[in-house]
Length: 99
Image 1 (cartoon, rainbow, N blue to C red):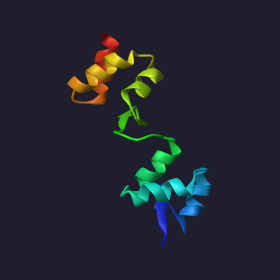
Image 2: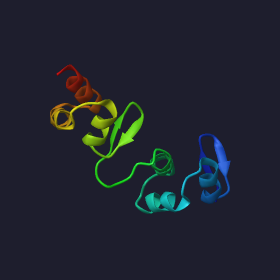
Image 3: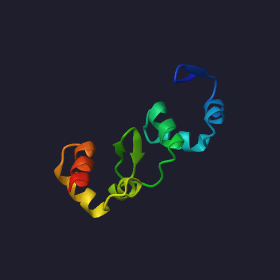
Image 4: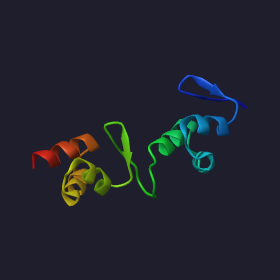
């Protein structure tokens, strides 16, 4: 079976993992849990660890409002508050920055 990622075809997941310098076992683990190949590779490349809900902001994935808040220098409890009340992560970050 061939695997295609970002327009390039790979004979094996091992070959793909080596190209991106990621652990093929993590790719297999995500795939086993039902993730698409693209999602699994992105999780490995972004090195998103832990469990729980994923939050995406500016093209990067975060496992918690706290991780996102720390990266942008925001109070995590405030960001968490806005994330519960806003429809999007972008709206929550904007509201938190303005507050």
